[in-house]
Length: 116
Image (tube, rainbow, N blue to C red; front, side):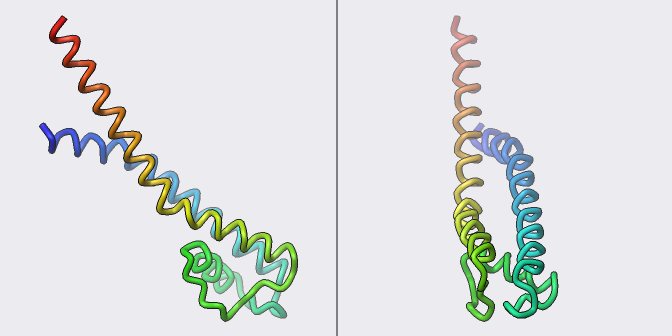
């Protein structure tokens, strides 16, 4: 029973988590590309792939510190990425917890229907 419930929870959560990760990947690519055009080579963002790498390290709160945005817009994008980085761990946990409660409520309502 518990294994079936766990499987149901993980399968129910997997699509939402995958969608969330795809959105994060999209935002990382967009913000890295944006920083490449905003900051340019003078700010250390020499190529789009290196800018996307910078965005991913900032998003994951690693931040090596070798490249730092110099403009106000670049710093704002970095700030948004840092805030978004916190959701990378929080959002999947919330999705799994919500799916757990939904599955438990469904299970309890089926048991109540059986008794009536």
